[in-house]
Length: 232
Image (tube, rainbow, N blue to C red; front, side):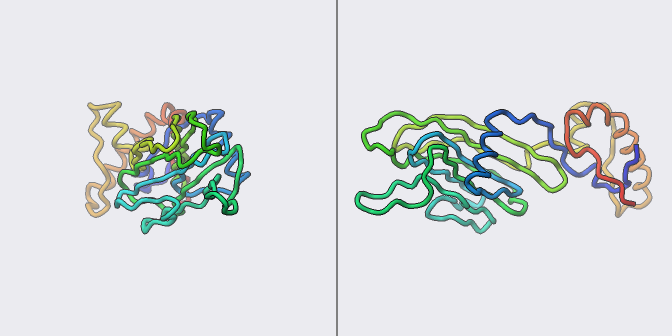
């Protein structure tokens, strides 16, 4: 197995391989249908009626992304808002669909920290309708060259209510080489490579490469992005 000597092979995060659930395919189809934008981090809300549900995300900085604040200083952007129910006598607003979606994305790496995700049932299409609406929130984290991690949260919400769906931390996705070895092989003593310490660098790198070769077969079927291509 040809591995590059770059420390990137040991410092980058490995993303668990996941099989897309049917509901994940539905979300991808709706994103294509309605023109939602995908980014390094994408948070999407889907439901199945004409009611007006809203997706809101509180960034680690405390800034709230919603219909009234579509863009955050950290790079998040509400690029798709659907099923806005107009006030009495006013013309319809935005896209209306029985298969709607709302979407917030970060084009670049999102800041580390906790993202609080909320769903609000703003208004029912029929004002007399008091039934709950089922929904799904899809979170997709796709760092460059590191595969893609998906999280799906299902729930139900009553009219005029706001629900805290989940807290999400991008840095918690996957693991790196040292984290995996510490968890799975606690007796191993695998030092990190420190390029500034030249005398120990070659020795430590050799130890890391030997360890990585040992665990590679079991790693590659569990994680994406275990090895960087060797372009040396």
